[in-house]
Length: 132
Image (cartoon, rainbow, N blue to C red; front, side, top):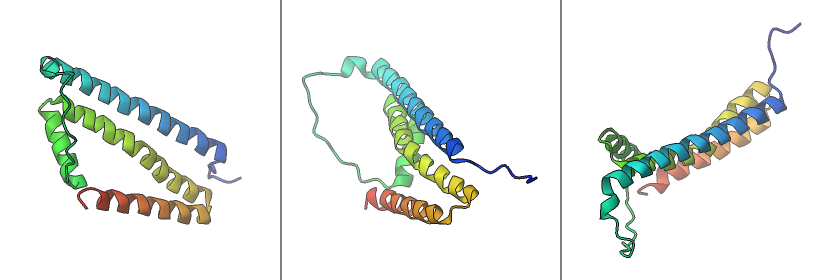
């Protein structure tokens, strides 16, 4: 009898479902807390009839993460919302990373290669998309 418990497709699907579901719940909860903090601190400054022009920030990913965590430490609601959005973006990325390890445990080398290529494309897109 084998000592190894081989991971099954049903187990992988269930874990991926948990990752996606709880990732979305976590990111939305953090964004909601950030929204409450933002409204508490700036609620009286909001003018519903004033629309600001969209300004694109050319930050690289390291700078964005550094500024976000610095803003969270200082208690800015905007940066807490931004963390929620970053977690929402990271949720499907974590699904791809989990799939890579799951396919490796399954011993399915073709899907390991395909998933690795997808992960590589996502990472290159993230690195070159920010401030690129």
